[in-house]
Length: 298
Image (tube, rainbow, N blue to C red; front, side):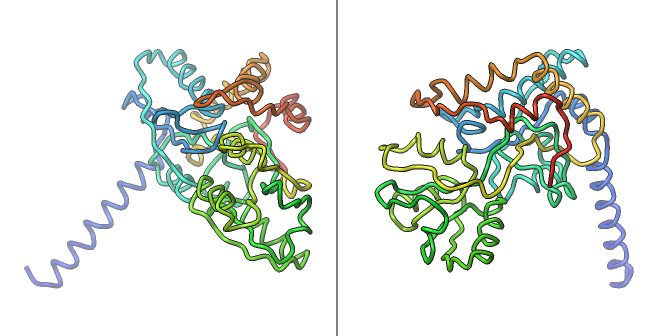
């Protein structure tokens, strides 16, 4: 066989493989889950109290909601032995994990944005956070203007990085902006005094503060810079799977079951250290629960 014929054959084999891969991703995700009798749930390592690890086990508010979805799938499709396979993701890998078909659902602390909806779909929001700063109390920083000329960190792959750069440009703050690989590293930078503030969603900051050796040494400050509606991510254009997830979340909201779940994770002692975040449900979240919908204001 000539080199030309070999190259031509290799090309068409590659095209066929790519086509089969695309078909697999484009197929009905719910059918694939039922056929495999397995659902893959992506989760975070340190998004307390929404999605994190306790002795290697994924737990949290978002995980409990996803577990309820799995139970709904078991009942609706008579799959009592449907198993869960967990996949750890980061701020950088969570969207590719869903878009590329590595996971069926992402149950973490991901904000529904117009940019992200180009690659993935989102369900009804189950939490609403706002972007603020975590600082050392001894530094007496109370507002964003107090950070002028100082060093601030935020996590790679989050909406907070973009917000921070925008605030810096609009307010001419002359910030030195660093990017951490994850929330834990960002908080460690603050503890080690490598930065003056950590910009992130307030609920995650409360979780990090509560996990510190001396929580009273830190405080969450500033006016909300953005509103962050958290929702479960799933592959794009998977209407049947989305209907199941949205249906279960709507049921949890209208039955008030979600309020009990909220109290469990935000107003009660939580693993691993029995810390109580004492974060009452915000009026924004309460209002969103009055009329459950996947539509959000971008």
